[in-house]
Image (spheres, each protein chain N blue to C red):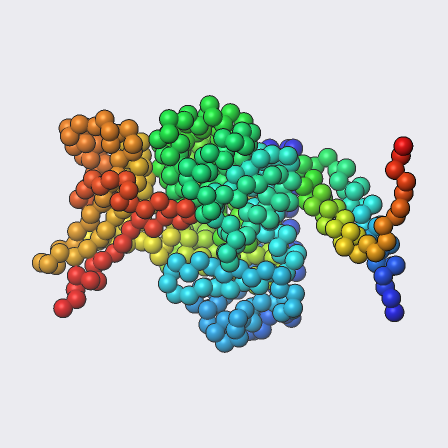
Length: 462
Length: 58
């Protein structure tokens, strides 16, 4: 709860004008510093006629400061390896190196963080967890694989450490059954952090063992997920099964942690709708823009998330185009007096994940929503391909959950498949071919799911 | 120049201040202040060259 922390209560007590004044002051300080410490950003400012001391409003900043993207950072790194000229702290002050995951196939951005930034990265994990009810002395289970080079690997460890809790970093190290065994041994599990799809896998495994999660872990206060979208029916089911609130955060390496979370409300509103992910706007300036016009979208519209770090010093991003797609919710439409803007929970996707199929813009999250709205489905994998006569086909391989796989008759299966097929058509406007496979034929994802392959180009090979 | 005695004094003073911060009632800051205090205690420990020989209470 916000009111539990005097610091947060003070921030929450700021009016919108006061919050924007704080953002502007922090932005000025950041830009002034970068003009003198980063050749990359100085060149961008000089090239666009922008001067840090000329900034008089956030609107003027948005209108005049050029955006950057992944390609700009990769070019900068290639020119001045390894960090590029955007590092902006002394090379010998780099205490942690973070790299993006490389899933785009274009290359990995490299970020150099100082000790101050490392703490802030931890704080930008601890803050949303605090809002979700994590408190000193709690026992927390971290199912996200720890370590490596990513912020998602290091930030949680730092966040749990400075939260004053006991954290069990079981992600990527223990099997799913091993995690369940450990959780039962610990007994008093208060908090669970996992990617969306791993929570699905864990829940599936718990149920398969005949364990009722709410009864087995009665002291669980909150589950916190990130990384992927989900259907609202799935969120409701998760809350029923585990007997606690489900929370979600939006974050990335570029945000140096979480840029926002469902705060203390959770992913479901009182009337069963999708809760807002409130943005921590005093640490990151977040714009949601139309990716073609770069104009801010209206409340309720989907746009691209553009990030400016206000607090981070090492390798900060200024007006970085994330490629993430989110529905903007202005603070006035969030249903409370809190003046932090928000994005819709459960529906964040990627503009570059979009597949153009038979003239439709299809995001994997749309199909995720349609498929996982059915409890009887455990997992799926999709494949788009071209047939010998040049037609585009979409095949979705479905694995049923344990009980459904055992008990469903052929007629039950037929009815379920028809419902799933209709749901996909309804949400993504495509008809797909459904094929049932055994659960063991589909992978388990420990972090971000990769459920789709696009093999259409292979169909054009001669 | 040997900064050692001064460093030790500064760290001892910092620990006193950090422990005062730990009395703060804000649960959002509590873990962070404890983390700070324990880091200072670690620096004091690793700089320690003489163990005080106090007689155990009988």
